[in-house]
Image 1 (cartoon, one colour):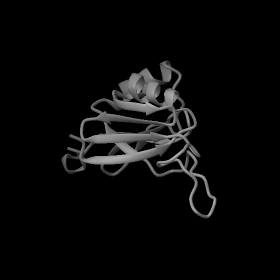
Image 2: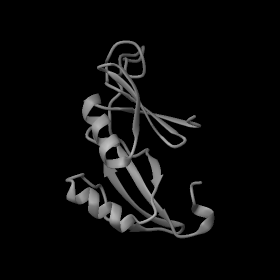
Image 3: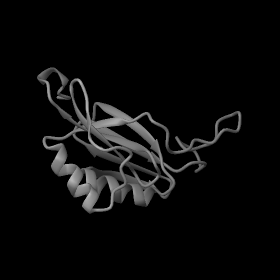
Image 4: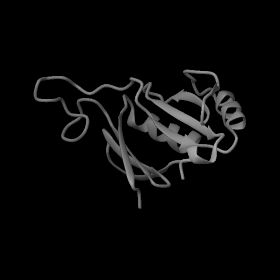
Length: 132
């Protein structure tokens, strides 16, 4: 059972499902409506909502603002070999926001999903930086 849930606003739910499933190892939990799907990977549940779509996470706020994809907030997926994962995703045509960045506790690269939401691929270089 998932212990963390993240919602991303995406322009095309079907394209987002394919991206997360085919490139990042998520499984589809449910897709009960065109504007919503739920995916999972380990302890992470990823809710995908189309903006402005009916009731739920994509609906307009009371002040009229409509949720939209993008920004810089993100979740991180731990990988064992960042160089190999980056090479595979680049070969698949996945867009990157960054080259590999060397940090204090690890290495990371940012990819964009089809709606422009970032996902951090993280390879720890210190034991205490491991995600699980």
